[in-house]
Amino acid sequence: MSAENVHFETRIRSASQEVVIGRGHRFCLIGERINPTGRRIFQEQLRAGDLSAIDRDVAAQVTGGADVLDVNMGVPLTDEADLLAKAIIKIQSLTDKPICIDSSVVEALEAGLSAYQGRALVNSITAEDERMEQILPLVKKYDAAVIALPNDVDEIPMEPEKRLALVQKIIDVATTEYGIAMHDIVIDPLAMPIGADTASGVATFETMRRIRDEHGLNMTCGASNVSFGMPGRHSLNATWLPMAMMCGLTSAIMDTRTPQIVEAVKAADVFLDHDDWGMEWIGRSRAAKAAADAAAAPAGGA
Image (tube, rainbow, N blue to C red):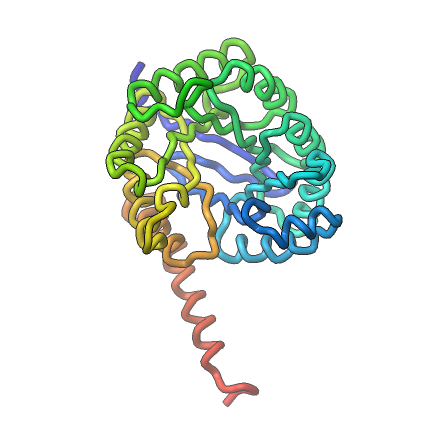
């Protein structure tokens, strides 16, 4: 199957805003910050029923340029389903950005999907039979899109050929057994830490190119994974993402509070002809200059 001329569009929505993920569109930034992993104080607040930190996280990610917000409420010793539903309701009262509902707990995913007003992106399934059997019926029931990772119960394969075989398995199961459209399958091609194996980056780029050319599917990844354990992480991420965009990556789950990385993506959009006439780039530059001028102005005006 060749998909060189196929550009699938994945559409997700809040109650009032639609975001399109696709090769003909600007790169989709999925803000990752609303996640308690590695955040002890945030975890303690959530255990106490205090969701106030979410206000700051939403504001920071949206201000940084997030198009979509990934929401994870995986806190040990809590009712994750209840917590996730409450968080989604709260976030939708703060912003009209669409949401990526992120959980490994099936009951939490259903609670989040039930509470969500719009068309969500579900994060995530793997090629494991049990995982697909648990999650894909929810994706179909709630008319969502889904992120899928090409690994199974045996391994996270390093070879592009093995990853592509698992991508094909996911496509076959999702489309034929559950009636999920191709455009609603977003593949995570498995961006592995470059510090553990410098050859992993080349394997991921090859996987991306083949998913793009053979299937035309949209792709996303946890962008910060690639630099884990390395110094100069912002520079590595800001270099890797435009290279990945050249290979077909159309979105990434990332911390949009880092201007260096966001600007690298926005610049790549200009060169890839995803930003008509560079208007977003120009608008962002003008807004940044205006903010800098305002900050430099004497207090009370001059």
